[in-house]
Image (cartoon, rainbow, N blue to C red; front, side, top):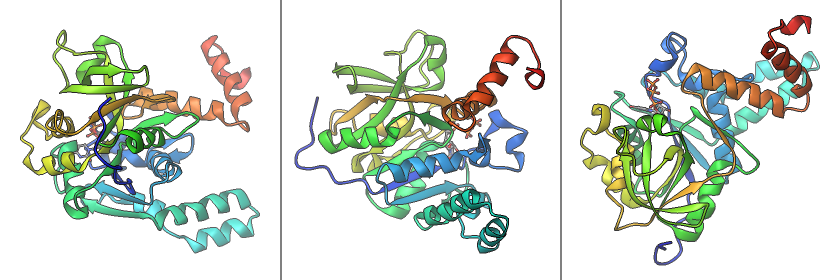
Length: 303
Ligand code: UTP
């Protein structure tokens, strides 16, 4: 594995790009931004902010489309609601609403005027914030596991510096939708990245290791963002900025522990909702019964 000279700068800020059009989720995303769609009762953005803070991140910056910063309201203090919940004895709900406001103290938003691609969205943030390093979480990739996925990447960054990507092994037919890694030295968990291709043509994939929505970006990647030219799909691709630094700055991929759900499409979100509910001790038995009943062709209510 290649190492960066000296101790790597610690990563204090996470960027959450949420300014995409969310076309795979229309019509739901016509009025409601995708990051506000719920998985088992909580919006996607709440899982992402929770993961960032659980990973030791101090500040979260949303990159939102103009006028679509509903997430800021989700994390704003609402004393009237807290009082109403207290009056009804709903102490658990009150505590969660209060907790959201403490998350909100760490949260700001900036605008991406036009959805020109993920590389452009991250570039809008780094232009405002400075040279980096930064963590990036895409809220529509939900990862459930014991250790927060971003924390696993940060641990590798603490050791090796540079850029660190989350990867998962996918079947060949799915790789055309992802950035795919050309691997070098591989210890079974951490993989040296020798090349990176966004949305490879079928048959040209360098491996089955697909990049999913967690990154630690080196200052060199941040510096490459303003120079991006349109790439795959005509968009400014974050993958291309990372690829431009390979050979000069360490880039590693991590086979993270945890299960990833693609909540950018309705099927993935349904699966994530069932997984979250099954992991919740208060709900798991009832949900398991309903799922079993559905799978065996019966109506869950009658089971
Ligand atoms: P996606 O590739 O899922 O695109 O973006 P999308 O527009 O949200 O969804 P579809 O494909 O049209 O259904 C991955 C992440 O990058 C953000 C998205 O909001 C999502 O969190 N993104 C994408 C931006 O913030 N700006 C962009 O220009 C593009």
